[in-house]
Length: 109
Figure 1 (spheres, rainbow, N blue to C red):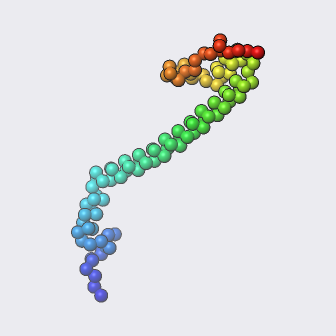
Figure 2: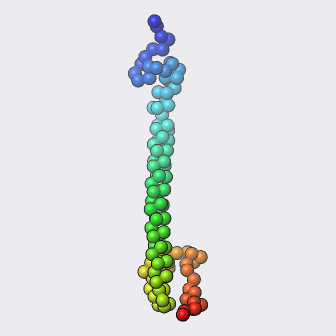
């Protein structure tokens, strides 16, 4: 039994025209670069997601710690100290994200 496909190298299962096109494609620098770039972007996206989730977890823990310290505070000075311990980077935050001082308006029992 004869086959119309002539085996060659590693692409023997392909027809002649398809095999030539595949060899030309895989030998193209543009194809190789685009595949490599796609893989780098794919893994970078997963890494960014992992780092983002880790940072989100840290923010959640900091918020929980601040909440517990604020609940335990009984004076405005203790509130200020809790805020200073948990949010040392607030001066670097954009103005709309900074907490506004409302300690003067608090009613202390």
